[in-house]
Image (cartoon, rainbow, N blue to C red; front, side, top):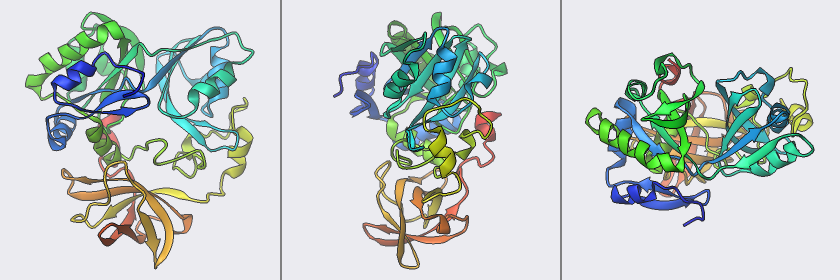
Amino acid sequence: MGSRVSVLEGRHVELGAGLSDWNDMALAWTYATSNDEEHKAVREAAGVFDLTALKKIHVKGPDALATVDYLVPRDMSRLAVGKAVYTPMLNDDGGMDDDGIIYRLADDYFLVSFGTGDTEKQLDRAAKGKNVSVKLDDGLHLISLQGPIACDFLNEHTPIDLPSMKYFGVEKTKLFGHDVILARTGYSGERGYDIYMPAAAAGDIWDKIMEKGHSKGIRACGVVCLNTIRIEAGLLFYPFDMTAEHTPFEATLGWTIPNDKAADYIGKAKVLARKGHDKIRFVGLLADHNAPVGEPIAGGETVRHNGKDVGNVTGSIYSNRMKQSQAFALVDPSVSADGTSLTVEGPDGSINAKVVPLPFYDPEKTRRTG
């Protein structure tokens, strides 16, 4: 396994977890519970995930704002204290180097949370010559509680008025008596919360959620479940659904590139020049529902239109809950319109599919934002 360690690893093993490495840390890929049971918990009660494998960097000091504003295309000067923002991170060619969430905890303090891309290197570049501290914090653990009862459950154990926290809000507070950073963010398509805490508090917080939440239907959930719910919710996973070759426009993330940001940022000139010149486009596919397309996260199947290769599947699931075979694909822009009929060349032959709007689940996104 990787060199980075979650203090919760032993608890996952006790729950029958199958561990696998991601981002240089062992994650609970599965538990003894079935994926359907975990999926049901997220959609009907709440699922608890150990996402400590995401990397977290504290950016503090007089030039903290200037640093993160140069790192990302989002206009960070507009991000108020107590708010967070999803953002891509770009390379010099305007392609996506990574994506993540940036939380503004004070005028001069940002927390950057991200996955496997080059954010750490790019942050060091953005901070060069500035009066700022940039510190990777492997001791900062992340537990995510996602599902319709998450708000009411956590509200019983924190002094803040959690129901009043808006989508992408964040606050320093206490949970079960421990100092935490509590944010209304997540990767599930449900109302949920990401809880950042010191390693010394992680075990107790995990245990309290499991003990007090079990009778309410809260269950520990693994990465396989997370992949299922994020595809249903239309949420991309770097570097499977987009890579350094793809612009945010090609990945349906053009809304993250402002037209009016005056300040410079990494990749600005190139990404703006590439707007309107998509070479490929990210889409959702519904396939014949009795013929699942591929395996979670694997992807790679060829997509065809009228016998011509036009792209490939990047990720897919069969949703037992929705009775649908759902997939993400990168395809030629000429076949990306909703309703376009395509075929997916799976291991057992061609499967009929069509392009559909995203997300598959809760298309109005009322569950996550309401």
